Every structure is written in structure tokens, then in C-alpha cells.
Length: 211
Image 1 (cartoon, rainbow, N blue to C red):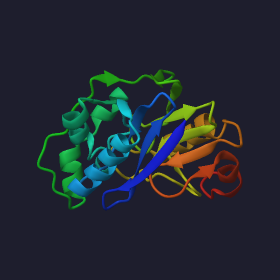
Image 2: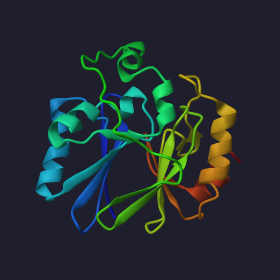
Image 3: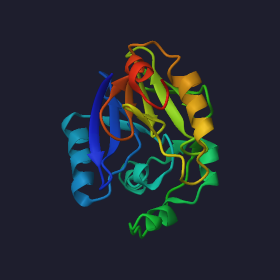
């Protein structure tokens, strides 16, 4: 599996494009929010001959979902996420709270992902792991073959996701991190929703919220 990272929108949210030798691809947390960012994404997909097969959301905070409408219009894909994310305010009022203006209503899921579900594209599979606390239905996506996990805003390098937003809960988040993420092999690479990648062993040793 190959991984292309796009730090999109003013919050530098990590949008992940995953693909393999079959040229089928998955997009995690499309935060693209401008014509320039749409073009960067489209040009990479086209220049590499990729076919986008699935649009995933770890969670539905606005900076992780700004590009969902564009992907629906351009590639015909609706997002997939956990059903508990619909308990939060939709993207439009969230963005307004942070001073961003969104003119469209967010596109809804055409499939709710359950914990333990396998998402497949090409020869690649991702295991969905429920890691709530930053938001009520936060998911992480684990690829065992390539020893990596995409954690959204649950776990960062030497930090954790904030829990003062809609339906966040710190004890729930810490439990999810300790029991669902840090139980993975030590060499597992953690790709977060913002900032640089880390590893399970690094967070066990150096994350002040956990160690």
C-alpha cells in the first residue's frame, strides 16, 4: 500500500490517499476546501491513473469533512463513517463556531461503518476500530500488512485529541487509546489527523497523557 498525505485547509488537516498496485484507491478524511486543493488532489489521482473507490471519515469534525461534497460531485462517492457521528452538529454550524463559512449542506453517508468491519479496495484491506472520545463515533483504520493505523484526531505524536468539543469525553478517549491502539504491535506506524506520524512504541514511552 502506498500513502499520499495532503495537509489541507487552514487547520492543516491530514488527508490520506491510499492506493496499491491495482490502482484502486481510498480517501480518508478529505479536508480539501479550495479550488487549489481540489486540483492538487485531482492531479495526483489522474497522473497516477488511480480509481477512487471509497471515501472514509474517521469522524465528522468539519476540518475532516470539508471535501466530502466535492468528492461526491467529482467522483460519485458518498462518505462512510460510524453512525454515532450523526449525533454531533453537522459540518456547517461546526465551521461557523470556528469562524469558517460553508455554503453547502454536508453530504450524508450511504453506509455506516461498524466496528470490526473490513474495508477493501484493490488488494488492500483496512480494519475499522471504534476509538471514541474525541467525538462519539471516531474510527481508526488499521492495515495489518503494512503495520499502520490512521487514527484521525484520537491520537497524535505525544498528544491526544481534544475532548472539549461536541460530545467529547477524555476518559472514553484514553480508554480507547490504551485498549484499542496501544495494544497493536510496537512498530505500528500511527498516522494522525494533524501533524507528523509516530509509532505505538513511541507513544507508550513518551506521550505524557498516557505514560
